[in-house]
Amino acid sequence: MGDKMNAVTDEEFATTVLKSDKPVLVDFWAEWCGPCRQVSPILEELAGEHGDKMTFLKMNVDENPVTPSNYRVTGIPTINVYVNGELAKSIVGAKPKAALLKELADFTS
Image (cartoon, rainbow, N blue to C red; front, top):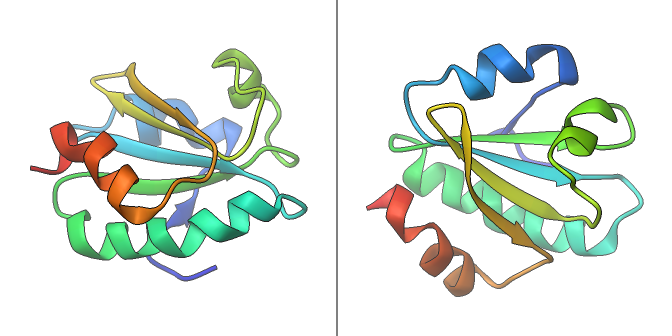
């Protein structure tokens, strides 16, 4: 894991994510998840390129079961984007960078 994406916990989720004044991407992942490891460096790159427009965070679903359950995260990786406290986009599964950029274009341009 690189250091462009901070971890967020169940306890911090409401204040860090839902009360943010800019869009927040949350990568729901786990240590044992192969596809999560594939998508992680791509998200780190995107955080470096678009971190001024949106906040990039990651949440370990094994250590923080409440938030994934609240948002019905059943498969990982799941990448959710929250805007003004609402879930604006959900991307399930590992995708290449070009596909992620296309999915996130509304928030990064």
